[in-house]
Image (cartoon, rainbow, N blue to C red; front, side):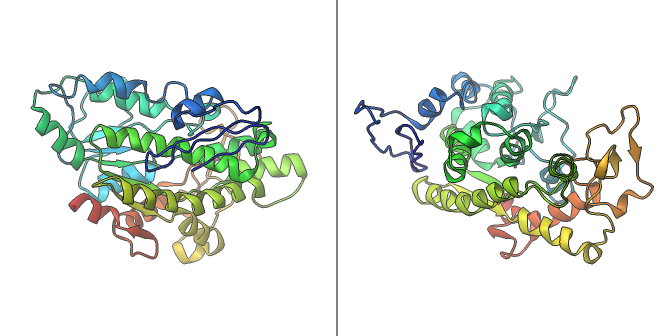
Length: 352
């Protein structure tokens, strides 16, 4: 994967670990790794700090069980709890949460793949978690446990929604294709780091962006128009086209790498366009919040409004689906056909 910035070139690491050698506009050698290249632009800072620190601990300390799952999304948590028969996994950073026998939940509000969208927080916490002293086991046992764990995450939508919503200059510095490659490059780098310490099974999803109540409210406020924020939606679509190809490349070059890829974009879009088919009446306005579309993240704060029947709503607040919606998504993630999740659904991935 090569990222060409408008004013200069840099060398980036491809998904299979190979490196393309480029010269910058001044003829200087700009060869570097993917991680180092992005760090120069401020897009990777401390994402992998935890990984290097924990490698020395893995021989003797581990918190994982053979049914462990790493989570970064509400629907993912539903899938693990409802269908994998694991308890709902509380946030890793929740006070008093020191039990990780069934897995760890690193979901963080507002997080993304880039520094500008709180990149790296979940992965730093993962590194911390892997160092916790729960029981002792041999290196061989550690490797087995890590390889059986399932790493599920949904990340990237904030990287497309936030710059579009804030009119960030970052989208003026890169073409849409370049920006998407940068986001996917960071995600790929983290997958490779998890693979290096033993992770083999990953669950990812296509993204949605620009059609939640917050985006609709922002578009109304800034342009007076209705509907989705087209730029964020287009970036998500480009992401959804590119990521599957990267996953196939990883699969072909990383021995034992296995994944499940859920078409969240299409399933969400179907509910936006045909709400009654899926038991919803309101798919544009949030159940809880304030302002147009209840698109302000004020749920629980002074002046917020709350719907009467939450089961009619696709969105609970300005950006998050309701429990009913998440259950529907989780069910498809778990045992959906190859029309919506492939090459394996999560059920199959857990059994491999």
